[in-house]
Length: 168
Image 1 (cartoon, rainbow, N blue to C red):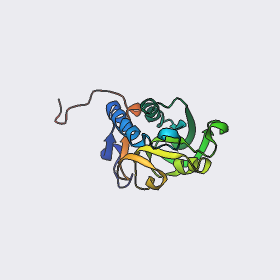
Image 2 (cartoon, one colour; image 1 turned 90 degrees about the horizontal axis):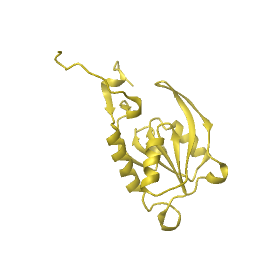
Image 3 (cartoon, rainbow, N blue to C red; image 1 turned 90 degrees about the vertical axis):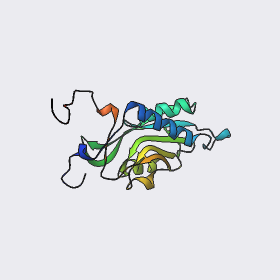
Image 4 (cartoon, rainbow, N blue to C red; image 1 turned 60 degrees about the vertical axis):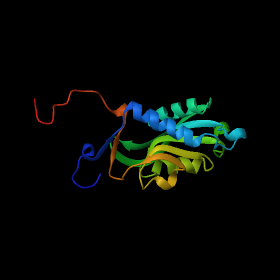
């Protein structure tokens, strides 16, 4: 975030309904675009943790039964760190990534996807949301947001009472 703003001051709040709609829209964009017969995909690999919900929705919508995860740590709380792979899918499944959809919720700086793309250069990389710095690392996305926007995903939020703007 730039300026003196706190993350919530330029926040984009995403509800469960919204992530579901946007993930389905991503599935529609990817439908019949795979390299296998009929435009199918071999597998979906979610970048944990944010890519898990969108990957589940894509797997359902595109009828992909092979679903796996790659765990990449690139954040400590809200501070970005150098990306490192903690767990990856079986090499026999992945190969060079051909026929595999790699899914994440958001591409921010692109460092996470850059690391995963080095491992699987022929995979198709898709995110639900994209920021300008990370866009070159993504093959398909649904919504672009400004670099200084903080996205609040539903799995990071809790419902609680909020005082009315004008008080009680």
